[in-house]
Length: 195
Image (cartoon, rainbow, N blue to C red; front, side, top):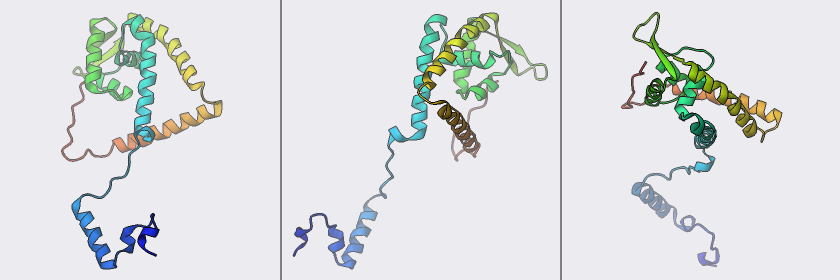
């Protein structure tokens, strides 16, 4: 019975050992080892990013037309909406937004009288930002809309699943923060924090 009678037999297994090792060596010399497959639709960072973008953009439709504000502007309003005063750097850190994004949003918000900028008590170089009454009025209108939308999204989960999701997201965030604190790879560019 020849090898042709076994269509699923690996031909390499039927070679003499010496020839097998030469064939394997030539394969490894001809190119890099096979990379593991990345299935993007099952890749957690991608899925979290897509979910976050879908939720953000859907929510943005609720307030962009009505109030003329962008997603970064809404995030700044949301962060300062509790009456807090922060620097641009603190806002960037709290919202996990890019510093350039925050800086541009702050410029637009200053032009449209949504925030006030003043020097800090202890460090005059560190400008502190607070919401104007106009921005606080927008905040008061958007918050109920945002909470309703959150309820609609999480309605797909049971009460237990919501509690589990909250716990799991907190764990993942803590781990991601821990990994983000690792030293940057050699040659990576870092930007100064704009206060």
